[in-house]
Amino acid sequence: MISNELDIEPFRARLRAHGRVQVPGFLQDQAALRLHDCLRDEVPWETAQRTDAELAPGLLRSPSPGSGEDTAALQAAAERARNGFEFYFDRYRMIDARRDGLHPELVLHAVVDFLNSPPFLQFARHLTGDPAIRMVSAIAVRYRHGHFLRSHSDHASNEDRAYAYVINLSREWLPDWGGLLQFLDPAERRVVDTFVPLWNSLSLFRVPQPHVVSLVAPWAGSPRYSITGWFRRG
Image 1: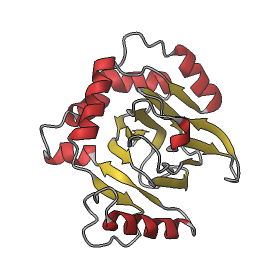
Image 2 (image 1 turned 45 degrees about the vertical axis):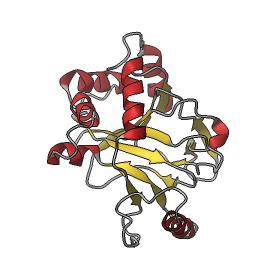
Image 3 (image 1 turned 120 degrees about the horizontal axis):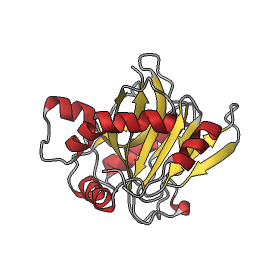
Image 4 (image 1 turned 90 degrees about the vertical axis):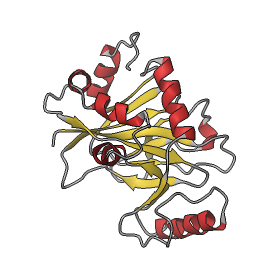
């Protein structure tokens, strides 16, 4: 599934030096196209927002774009975001679905198996220089107009997350559409680096680091699709 033409050594050095890197042309072309089509046409999305926020009735599924339900939920999330950490986007929990045998027709199940196969785990250990990585978590994510993820570091007390990754699967994404992965200084007052979700690229960064996904603009020409998660030690 990884591109046969990929030379990871320069990216390995950059990751070691800066704690983050974006690798273009990560997957084989046909694999990237197949995953994009699956995310666009086949995934039964659900809404994701902060776990301690009160979900409105019916919002376990993803509301129809532009519907009153969708607009009201986004407005409520935006109000909460003024006072602290908040997020709002669509997701498909790939690990849970694979474990529970849900939607067996989706190619995403094969992706879960691939990410946790011995060859990929060895690739992850070599790329990061961390021999303790033993598993890879994964969710599919779709950001539509108005979706966002406020500042956070990805630290989790119940998981040993070594690196966060994003496989970007949005075609012809433009920077002024938003949905940018932006890294912040320790005080979270200044953007110090930005990754545009370039088609078929891997964004990878050491955990913890403060970062955001900027608001997707109303003029964005398509949703922002990705597969994301963590390289974990435990």
